[in-house]
Image 1 (cartoon, helix red, strand yellow):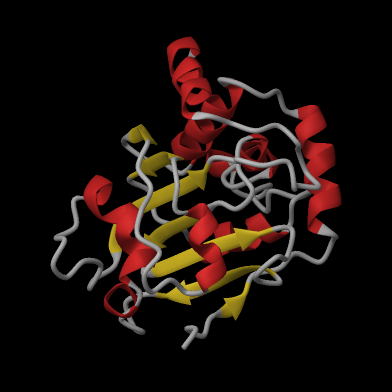
Image 2 (image 1 turned 60 degrees about the horizontal axis):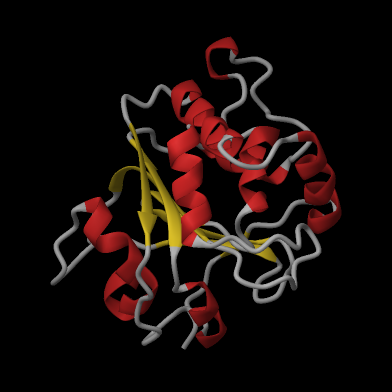
Amino acid sequence: MEPEGADFRPSEPYTRRLRRILEEYPDGSQVLREILQNSDDAKSTEQIFILDHNTYSSNKLFKSELQRFQGPALLAINSGIFEERDFDSLLKLSDSEKHDQFDKIGVMGVGFNSIYHITHSPSFITGDKYVILDPHEWYYKGGKKFNFVADNLAKRYPGQFAPFILPSKEPSSNPFKTPFKGTFFRYPLRDNDESDISKKIYKPQEILDMFRKF
């Protein structure tokens, strides 16, 4: 049975807005710089980038169709934890919602969406929340936000959490029983041209090239 969660959907048509954003934000290593900027603005004390070449089990996912995102991915881990207004800013793509916080301008603002150069559907864990963004509305209405601690989701859906376990240093036997002390983004690499946002296919070698130029 699919877990319940809160819809995470912006008011403006998602793909159209993202396509315009990508025209304004360069591809390549600039994507990593945008991620690093968001991390810095969030007062994170560290930022880790990992290229994960693995393909993970599709056993017990939130939805069976999500197996397409179990392959190679760019991972970005930092020590900051989302505040409620950071979730809100993801939904308001044209307004970072940080104009009254001068020391946090840009956190999860428009620049975050440069990651759609490389992925169809980002997901992330922060605190006790697991968020899947689905701008094409293939499986969710824009996205879904789950409380993975309260609903014991890692135990119920081990395949969904498998890509997060080793990099987060969670115990493999019983992971994510408590909130994650940081934010862990996972960007499955786009492996087809179905997207209305970008047609570019990304392979692991291209992420390695980004690392070298960063």
